[in-house]
Amino acid sequence: MKIESKKLERGQVELTIELTVDEYQPFLKTAAQIISQTTKIPGWRPGKASFEIVKQRVGETKIWQEALELAVRKTLIQAIDQEKLITIGSPKVDIIKLAPGNPVIYKTTLSLIPSIKLADYSKIKVKTNPVTVKEKEIKKSLDNLGKSRAKQILVNRKSKEGDKIEIDFESSLDKIPIENGNQKKFPLVIGEKTFIPGFEEQLIGLKKDQTKEFQLKFPENYHQKNLAGKLVDFKIKVLAVYQMELPELNDEFAKSLGEFKSLEELKNRITNDLEARTKTKENQRVEEEIIDKIIEQSQFEDIPDLLINNETQKMIEELEHNLGHQGLKFDDYLNHLKKKREDLLLDFMPQAIKRVKSALALREITKKENIAVNDQEIEEEIKQTLQVYGNDPEVEKQLRTTDYKNYLQNILTGRKTLDHLKSIMTR
Image (tube, rainbow, N blue to C red; front, side, top):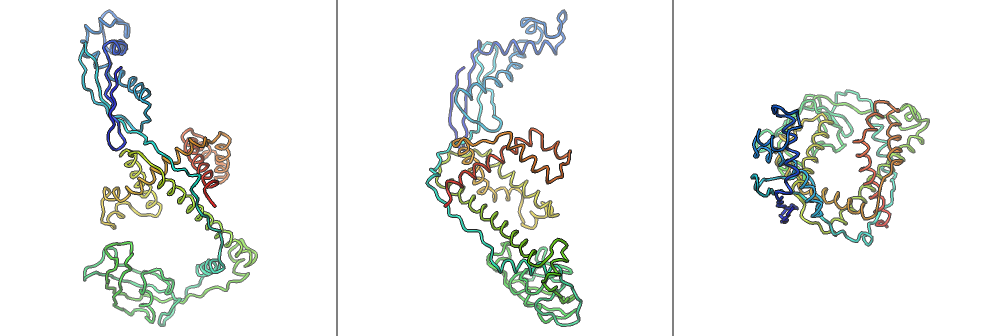
C-alpha cells in the first residue's frame, strides 16, 4: 500500500492511498462471496459460487465496485495507524481510480486533533482570595426575605419610596414604538433599582389613575445595543399603589418560616448559604484563571473547523435548553436580538475556540499527569446521585447505563485534573 500525505490548512490532512491489484484481491474475493449470497445463480447455493462464476454472472466491474467499501474501510484504518494520526469526525473519501486490472487509488481528507506545546504550568501561579461574608450581605439577604413576606396594602395616596406600584407604560425612540417596550400591569417596588436609572424616581408622588410623560437616557452599556445611550420617551399610567408592610425580623418571624427556632438560627443558615455561594464563585474564578493562563502560554496547532463548528452548535443547544427552562422560545429570543441563527453562531465562535482549547489542554494535562478515574469512584458518584433521587429504581437504571458511566468518567476526570492544577498553581 502506497500512501502520500499532504498537510492542509485548518488542522486537516489529505492522504492519497494506492492499492495494487494483488493488495485488492482479498477484497474482491470477499465481495464475490457477498454478491453470491444475494444473487440467484443457477446450480449454486447462496454464497457457494466461485469467483469466476460470480464474475460471469454479474461482471467484473460489479465485483470491483462491491469490494471498494470493504477495501477503504480496512486500508484507511491501516493508513491512519501507519501515519500515526489522531483523527476526529468522519473522513471525506474521493475515488480517484477504480478499473478492473489496475491499481485502486482513493483520496481522503481527515480532521486531526491538534497537537499542543503545553505551558510549564508548574511555574504559573494564581492568587486565591479568602472567602468571607460581610455583615451587610447577611443583612441584605435577611431584608430581602422580609420583603418577600411583606403585606401589600392598597392605599389611596401619593406613592413614595418603598411602595409597590403597578403601572401601564409605553416607550418609544424617535417617536417609533420600541419592540416589546409596552407593558401592562407592570409591578415594581420604588427604590429597589430594578429598572433603568431614573425610572423609579419618576414614579414618586403619583396616585392611582395619574399619568406622566418623561424622557430617560439609557445607560451606555445597556445590553440592547439599539437602546444603549439613547434618549427614550416614556408614557405611564398608575394603576395602583401598595404600601409594603414589612414584618419585624425577630424570632417569631424566623419561626414563621417553618424550619428555624430563632432569628440567630436563620442568620446562621443565611451565612452558611452565602459562604457556600461565595466559595463556589471563587472556585470558578480560580479555575477559569488557571485555564486562561495555560491557554495563553501554550501553543496550539491549527484547530479544525469541525471542532469549532461542533462547539458553537453545542453552545446554541445549551442556550435553547436554558431558554426553554425559563419558558422562552428560541425564535422569540432571536427576533428580540434581531439576529438569525447563523449570526449567533458567528457571535459564539471566539468563545467556542476558547472552549475547544480548554478541552484540548485539559486532555493533554490529564494524559501527562496520568490522571484517571476508577470504577469505585464512579460507583460512589452514582450512589450519591441516587440518594438525591431517593434511590428511585428507574433513575438507577439510567445511571447505570454504559453511556452515563462514560459521561461520568469524563466529568470526574476533568474535575480531578482541575483539582490537581489548583494544588500546584494556587498560592
